[in-house]
Image (tube, rainbow, N blue to C red; front, side, top):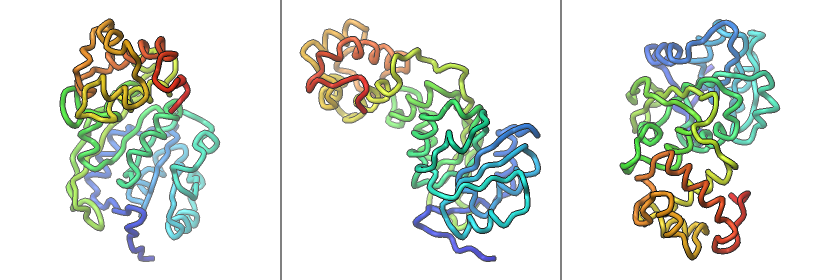
Length: 275
């Protein structure tokens, strides 16, 4: 049955067998593995993974592709129809850890990453395809324009490395951008010992909210400012005139801890649980 790619679902189906094999090599699949695939499409990865693993869970939004998947005879295949951003991952993935292997739809890749961060404990390893610009941001060190919110948040929970670059011709239809495959290895514990990870995320987002401005001004604009903000920053060795993109992960950890202790002074009376 022929399937016409749907632009609204961001469908660019992987067709290059070499790329498939490189992804599988990075995933290091074993017969006991439980695997999640988001957006299986026409099955380039699904077909190869099914005979290799204990179980394969797939999340698919396109009803035509869901029907195809549900018609397959393999007992180890678990089909979850719906939007991966809305599905209840802990309720569906009840035997962690899982490996997550996917050619992510580019229009939701950043949102999927935030959901992964929320459920990091479910996964031991992730091998994910991104638009090259997103991949560059995830791997970026401090100090450049690519370094941003996801660079910091993902580095706290994962070791990340680039597996390979993928040209447009590896897909049908060919996208207008290049792609990259990244390997995420989940750390046994996050690099930072945080009191509240939601508060850490809020601090990082606030710091980058106006990235052309100084850290002092960005934090104040995000409701994290107070009268002696400069003194607090200088007390932890951070110049208030720096920009968020220059801070290391460890400096973001120190900033979060200092702001936590000063939260009663925030402009607007913000609380630690706020997003």
